[in-house]
Image: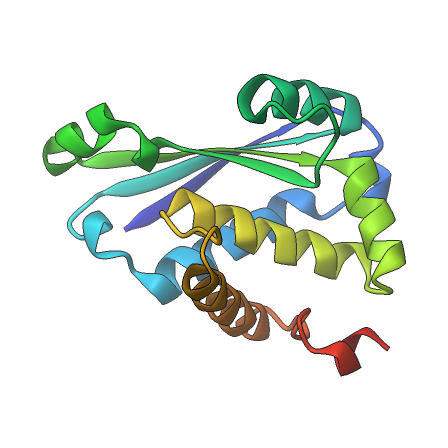
Length: 171
């Protein structure tokens, strides 16, 4: 199955913060899809996702509109799997668009400094997190959170990123 990532850089500061954003994003997407091989994607020709690298102002507006939270966040994921029409038409689809991800530069940068991890590693972690949401994973309940974190740790290890939930890796 072919994976296609449509990347839109909506803030010029991303070029300095993460010059390899395109190749890195594609690697993360491919790793997630190929490692998890979700059953609902079996037999599909192409799986795609849209990513926008934006900023706090942009993501704050979206967070307010869709989540009723008037503040920026590091990432928002809009999963097509959450749409009943998507699930109804999925069996006939040969090409599947999983959804959209928007990442906020300033929040991501501030978090990487606070957590004492590289911007690149934090970007990879947050992107893995976003892709898991597009595949239907969530963390609203404790068992869901544990399952999602375990998958993140596994995928991050494959991508050469330390376990972000291990207190010792943050020292």
